[in-house]
Each structure stands twice: as C-alpha cells, then as structure tokens.
Length: 115
Length: 117
Image (cartoon, rainbow over all chains, first blue to last red; front, side, top):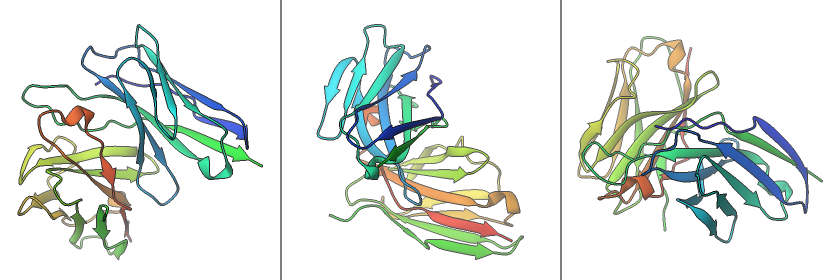
C-alpha cells in the first residue's frame, strides 16, 4: 500500500481557504485517494475521495494532478469547527481476491483554525 | 439513520483481565473493520470482516486478540490477559462491502477507550 506524506500541522484563520497537500509517490494504478477528518474523541469521518483530476462535494475539493503522485485537499472558507486532524489515504485494490479495502492511516495533518 | 455504535464508551480494567468490546455496524453494511488508535502508534488496522468471515486478520497484534461477527451484524473484539500496552481507543467502522471495498466509504463509530491499569 502506498505511503503518504503530509504536513504534521497547519494554522489558518477563519474565512480563509486551506489547502493541504499529500505526497504519494508510489501510488498504484488501481489506488484511490481518500481524505478523512477526525475531531477529538470521535472516529474519523469521510470527507472526499477521488482517482484523478478534480472532485468537489459540499464540504471540500480534491485536486489530483495527472501523475497522481500528490493530491491537495481544499477547504473553502474554514471556520473554527474545521479544527481537526486530516488524513490522506491511498490504497485498496479495485478487484481481485484479497481486496479488503482496509485503510492505512499516516500521522495526518492537524489543522488549527484561529479566530 | 443510526450510525455505527460501540460499547462500552470507556472501559477500565486491570492487567491480566479479559475484555470484550462490541460494535454495532450500520444496518445493511456487510463489511466491518476494527482499528486501534494510540498515542504512540497512531491509527492502525486490526481486522476486517466481510459478512461473518474475516479474510484479513493481519493487523491483530498478538494471539491475545480475537474477534468474531455473528449474523453478519454485531462484532465483538476480545482481548485476553490485557496488558498496559493494550490501552488505546478501539474504533469500529462499517461499509457497504461488495466487489469494490476500496471505494467504499467507511463509517466509524465513536470508539471504546480502553485503559489497562
């Protein structure tokens, strides 16, 4: 499973756009890129998933360049409630035996949003 | 609808005792995962169920750890002869499962905080 590298921490202010970049140089052809958010004393929560180019939902956007060796999670106009740890994950296989879809978490990025 | 629930929310036990942690997945989800989150190790995979079978137990740290799932629903994680290093938050997640679990969204429960004295 591909290893990911992301900043340990980031600071931002309310109302700003936050971009968190994740490197995954060894991503495999069949790997998807998934981002989770975790608040203290809660389980991780799915934010967004993509394979290539750009994906947008009501919470965030995910930008994936053509080589797929990195991805950027973009949070528009963050608020204090967006303070959390954000995990970038790649892995799983699309088909075949032994495909479990288990998630391999790295250290994550602790985002601190200040007033 | 109801999300993934786990019980107990907190468990304090003495070293050497056995503990059972319960997970109730979202109704209709065939895939179920157990993870462990501790300060020193981050968030790590333990075991995966598809239905009642466990095709991937590769994350279980020792033979003191076991898990079962009955009726394709509730799962129990059992830790025998607990040690202090077992102290962590144990998280359960479920997903639809099926042919493409890699793209399934996993929904996590709130976790059980285990403290071994």
